[in-house]
Image (cartoon, rainbow, N blue to C red; front, side):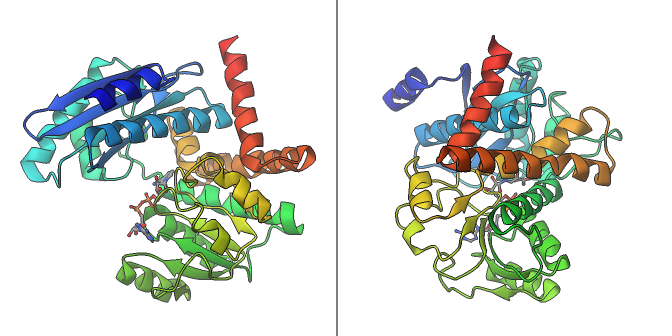
Length: 351
Ligand code: NAD
């Protein structure tokens, strides 16, 4: 309990709503980080953590990341995230009950917090929640839940092209070797998009069957237990879990570029300098993985056509180019340039 208290005391966010769900033993944490630009918005994650404090810490970190992501795209939303820290798998009626009670808390906040899916939340879960709160995002005009993954993948593809243009003077992915770590919702779409544009795709997933099926479909190759970090490639695209860029993995990387969808790819802040020292160009995660957020913001404004949404998502390419140029001119990391861009947008909104 003391750890929860010290986390809340040291957080620079706006508020944390915490609730213990007695029937399931889950802790619910709604972390509202910032609302300078608009309603605080971010996905809901269901996961099991060693302690409730670990769940809260994750929620706080992710909420702060959402403030950065929303400010970078400047589409009128603030940052938040919710974590349902469950003691183990919660299924069937028990899960429905937890989601119902959680959705009622979201409703209670009256629109100060808007949410959607994050890891562990399935489309069926969103359907349950939609019966108990109006404050969900990512539903089209017919009330159908839109899957953000193709838009996130499109943003990563556009981002990779922008990085190629910056680094090699040519945006084409054709013939380039791209290692995609995580072939789930986002990684799966990305692999197909890369395959369709003639890239040589290497697939790495702890679910080897999933990776193999997809590799067969696009003519890619699976890693088969080989170390993904030390495999030579043009781009390492982390699309699975966070903290994969760290003091252990960065020295092994055999690529000039890291660009993928995973949230919180750096284990610690120093890792961005470790990448820079190795002359590895890093596309900041919250910039390149904003495709889902951009599409949902526009769906909320009534744009639901896939091609028009892809056009909106393609703005990620221009944003990344500006960030890479600014970073080169100032001799600093791309993350420093991205963070300064965010600070500028937030300062303008707050003044
Ligand atoms: P997902 O759960 O559908 O896919 C993740 C895949 O990674 C799974 O196939 C899983 O087996 C694999 N995996 C897990 N650990 C691994 C490991 N250590 N090595 C290799 N593979 C591993 O998730 P997703 O929706 O595709 O999201 C992927 C990442 O992108 C997450 O970090 C998520 O937070 C981030 N993200 C997703 C979206 C979105 O639109 N879904 C938006 C922004 C950011």
